[in-house]
Length: 401
Image (cartoon, rainbow, N blue to C red; front, side, top):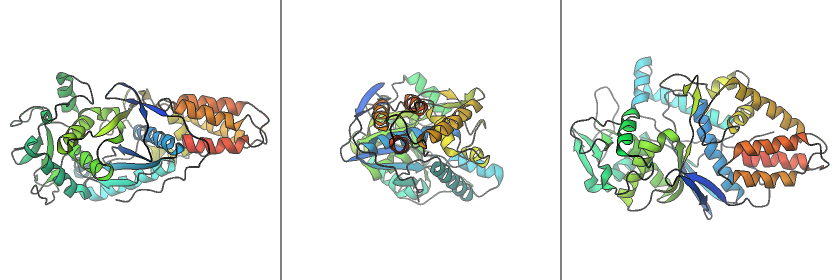
């Protein structure tokens, strides 16, 4: 599956400090110190509707992470999936009468365009579930005795992994509640344990299926990401990322499946972005309370202002989108563009050092914005400061001035 054309990230000289980032599994900051190549997997969209601000906030968090690695001189091997066959997509296609493949392709293209407009560094591998059928089948086979059938479907015994539960740190009661809320089937008869998850779904009438070594059917969600990540990044890669609603069951179960199959750790750190609300509830396609990136763009809002509005909130925070966020982003963008155009400014070199310092501390973008605000308000005497800051803001924050 084709990716999109990402921006060229300027090189700004010098070297960034060591990055420390919050790991959900340990519930604390951990050093991210890849050597040579940094490997990142971020779970992608299910393409049955357009990209909303909550999506954009999540992908922006991992765009910031990549930019810190790039600033350290690392090669970033970034993989993202797209779940281009799943129940919500098929349900939306059935409701609208549209062919599900056409619906998926249209929304995938819109997602690419939104990400490109927002200045996101593109993944090296952008991989669909449909093109990964053989990968999924091969990984299921490697799971051995931890796989069992239920009425033609195949399930994973999550307790085959003795460390199951360590990614989320949740007790079983909470796991069961979330599993039911987030696409699981804890009450299905025939399962060994309510938390066991679907690996391979046998054909259903009126739904697509593919031939495979497992027989006809289609993959489950968790095994899809495990298979794609292992194929393109290997085991023990640097960061598994996504929104905080993926901690359980998705990331917990993907990690267990991969660990049981390989005998190796899945990822070194599990990093999660907070949720964005609108009208008092988490922004959600299922609820329909969405602020769409494409709609904001169509209404003439500069994508860099949208990006600044998102950067005004720490990536791990839960927050609510309002018109004031966008207004703040637009005002800030105007002020910064005016400042970098001045003949003389405050020191650009000093600003670069301060930006690197705060971003190395768990991607503290709100503090980084306040540093640039203060720089923009100071007239100064540095004739080259504007050019230096323009490149630094582009490289580290992804904001094109």
